[in-house]
Image (tube, rainbow, N blue to C red; front, top):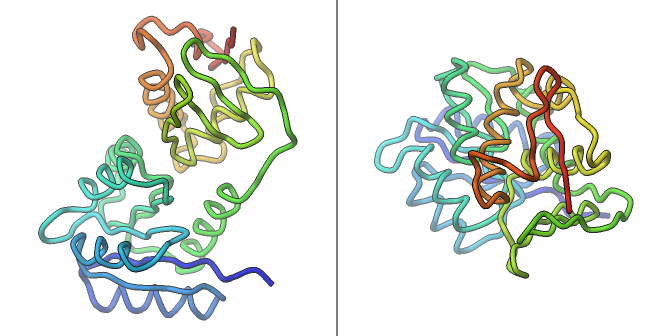
Length: 225
């Protein structure tokens, strides 16, 4: 049997932190808890986590700043949890590297389902395909990994999923709303954010993209060498 997923719940409210932890454990997961970003770092030094549930509004280092730092330090998926549920705040969370975003109050089952979806995306390995050359970068669709001059380039789960989908049909445009179906923002704005971030990682000139192209009136297209 596989080991249960180990989830770190970071929230400064005792009741929320403990109730989320208890609910996840009742549903077969292993959890650890932290009440601040500093305690999160201490937990990360002791344990390896499959996912971090991270509150935005915390004393000291806030969740958005902590998430941005995490993206520079590790590839652990992050689900942002906050009372700020407006679209612009979801976009802000995605911009700093969150893999998903859930506003308070929330149904515990929805949290569980979102965590499960992220973990499945983390674990899935599609059929082996040829690596795609993107200028100085190479994308391996089978592993969902991007490298530049042989060095790994960190991708969020959302970015990797987007590249994988575009890599299935290179040089063919994919509808923007189709790409948005599995994101937290079905309007497509979240996809636009991910494309902007990916261009910074892939393109020599992100403002004049060569490899991740916009197809006006349709969506986006990956155009490898």
